[in-house]
Length: 256
Ligand SMILES: [Zn+2]
Image (cartoon, rainbow, N blue to C red):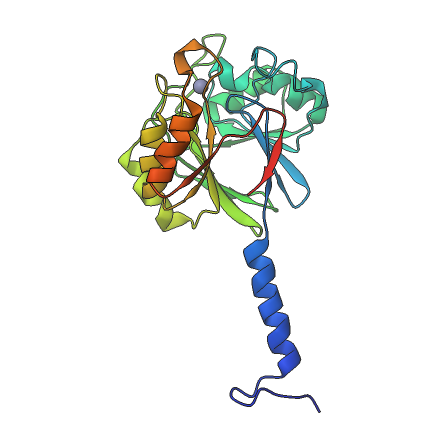
């Protein structure tokens, strides 16, 4: 005979187990490794999701990160610009990673000899087993390095048992971001903050408010002259908006 709770009648050992599981869910984190510019890797259930690989031509990253040592099970490609795709073909060929992108970029990868691709487009979602991806609007452009048409740029919401996150890709602040809380309760978001080509820190902080997420990793800053920022001022802007801006050192990982 088991000992039961005096008020609800539930066996006591079951209550302790359930509260332990609740705590476990709350403290569960995901690891994000930053490879410079907008290239980062998130590990989900032992699977490595690499976003927008650009290392070889990034003066800040190429001596810090060994591009030939990066492992990936999936490459998520937000759009076709060189500062997001430069190392994608070589990493995809070496690792056999599946490339997730829009239709036009999927066709372009096929022409480069990368057959393991999954085409998507804005508004669509797909369950990849360990995670689900939903493609959302990004206000930007998307030509490929050889001049091919790159389709529309994408942002991604990635849903997992371990948490959910949003990578906006290169984008302006847009009212479309207000839809995101209807689709996802985010643990963290990865947003560009470098201005000139994308949102600056103030617009990214406004985005954080719209998407109801206070835990933000900043990307797309300091890589070259057009997007040099004052990092402390950017962090302060987020602080005033009640959010945290993480600026991760290139090659380093954080738990989110
Ligand atoms: Zn870019």
